[in-house]
Amino acid sequence: MTNDFEKLISILSYLNIKLRDPTFDNHFVDRVIIQKIAFISKSLGIKLNYNFNLYKKGPYCPELTNEYYENPNAIINLETTANLSKEEKQVLDKIKNVIFSHALYRAHKIDLLQAISTILFFIEDTSRISEDDLIFKTKMEKPYLTDRIIRIALNLVRKLKESFSI
Image (tube, rainbow, N blue to C red; front, side, top):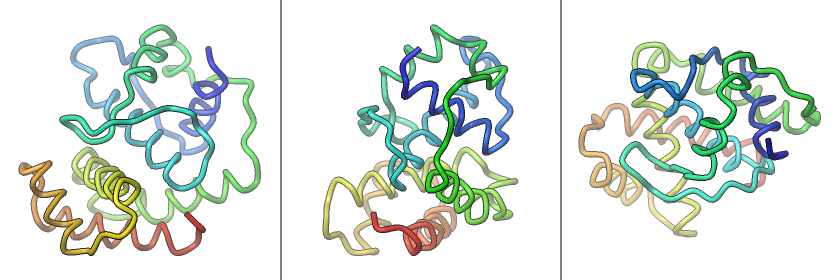
């Protein structure tokens, strides 16, 4: 396992995200969650060296996919030797408080994570982009996401970015 994957396991454990074996075909949702949490964490300043591209369900990293396919038990058991710093835990606490506590997360977890990670991807990809353009680009990229989900995701991204110099 790479150091980045070890750190990701620590992130998932700290966030208390229970996942099933990502290698099973019917556990697609678990794979999406892993990818989105990794990207959101990285976008908010946690050092992960994964390279993400925009794909069907939002930012996606093939290298990360290979790692969880090679180490499914690490995902299931969330056991790692990697420790998170105080600053990294503060980022993760912000994710808990802003994303996980939102009612939409409980009702539409995957759609919300896709919208948030896609918006963050566009922000990173285009240094100066208006909120209207973010909404438009996200809707064009993910036409199955509702306007409501995209607007809520944008508001949550705004809250996430308030506390961090990202």
